[in-house]
Length: 111
Image (cartoon, rainbow, N blue to C red; front, top):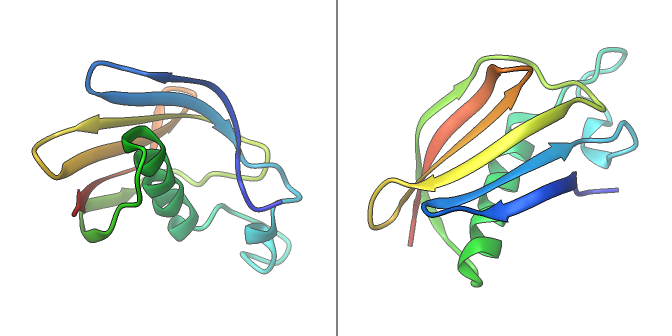
């Protein structure tokens, strides 16, 4: 499995929201880290890009990621609340939270 399980995806006035989980059998947990797997940051940013592409209905080239922050580890099976919202013509803020706490956030600058 290479994608998160997405529930309750909805479009909002400024972007989209969804509940996601990353099952333990997802390939990206292999080797990250042995005995104590965590969700890689590149998977979190990549999932945000795919959600932006889904929202816009087209491929997106990300030329920069601003204010990238990883605050709380996401473990296999954790459920997270994801949000994506427009911040400017080409800027989209994403955020992952679990139990009301920030896991990660950033701003995608897209072309």
